[in-house]
Amino acid sequence: MDLSYTPEEEEFRARLREWLGKVLPTLPAKPSPQDWPARRAYDLGWQRMLYDAGYGDVHWGASPTVRLIFLEETEKAGAPYVGANFVGLLHAGPTIAAEGSEEQRARWLPPVLRGEEVWCQGFSEPDAGSDLASLRTRAHRDGDDYVVNGSKIWTSHAEVADWCELLVRTDPRAPKHRGITWLAMPMDAPGITVRPLRTLAGSAEFAEVFLDDVRVPVANRIGEENDGWRVTMVTLSFERGTAFVGEVVACRRVLGELAAEARRNGRWEDPVLRRRLGRLNAEFRALWRLTQWNVSEAEASGGLPGVGGSVFKLRYSHARQALYDVAAEVLGPDCLDLERGWVVDRLSSLSYTIAAGTSQIQRNIVGERVLGLPKGR
Image (cartoon, rainbow, N blue to C red; front, side, top):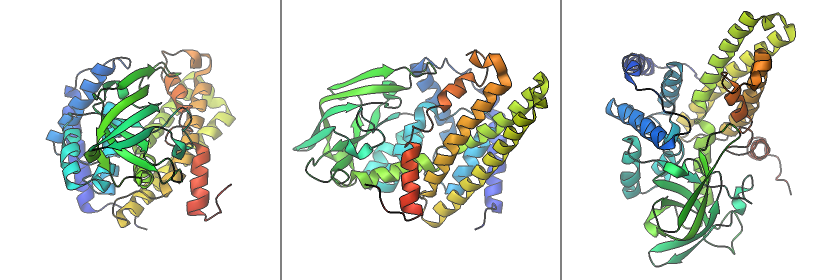
């Protein structure tokens, strides 16, 4: 498998680097992490700049390799993260691009690319997190609409979203994986109540969403009725395949900063700490190579990430937690100071073995789809 870059791809990298060097110094200060309306405006503004410069569609309009280069270079340059655009750019958008009709792609993709609309993710429920297929939010057909009742939890960016990628049960008599439908729900529809949730790190990017006779047009269905589980696997392949690429680059940068801090404060003299830093360096180098391998596989399969994304997500989640455990050792007593760098990141890292599919679920996927082991009972 060829993991090298073509001259055209290297030219794209050089052009992107030059552009980032010019525009990043002109950006306004980032808003407070707690001010989500301001963060929405900031994130949409950055996406508009990318769009105007010709980089707006790299998340699904470019090849997986170009997407990888884009994520690597923007993270290295310290460019703004996708933020409130996360679901639209990395989940819903690629799914609609892959599974939507021509009319649906024309309706929903351009506003995301131009930085005009934000999406949230309405998948998990109070009793359907890891076992997502057991979701209970119901939708029954009434003419040209689905009428939706139920609730969602951990709904990313629901407070500031225009649309929601929503999973509903449309056939309660079917086996649980076969009675699900994927809908695009307008967040201003009557009957929607959003209640923010505050995380351990103090942020509120998640919410509970309650749905009371919410009408969603049948035209907003992506894929066929009751075929939503297959469409969802497409969404999750993007979530687990390329969505964390920038974070691997960030972790490699943090690792270097930790080593430098350990040299400054004397903790570098601890051979156990040095060994842990060395192992993590090897771990993240290997994860980067795995990312490149997954991208090459996606190139060969028409652009969709494969089950290698689950291998990556499983290992990356634990490596990230190990990285910030080492950060706590380097900081010593300061690891309890929320004003210090890496402390809040350590708190957020605790969620990574749960978010986007728990480690237990990823092991099942790897066991069944990669190793060919029988399904558990």
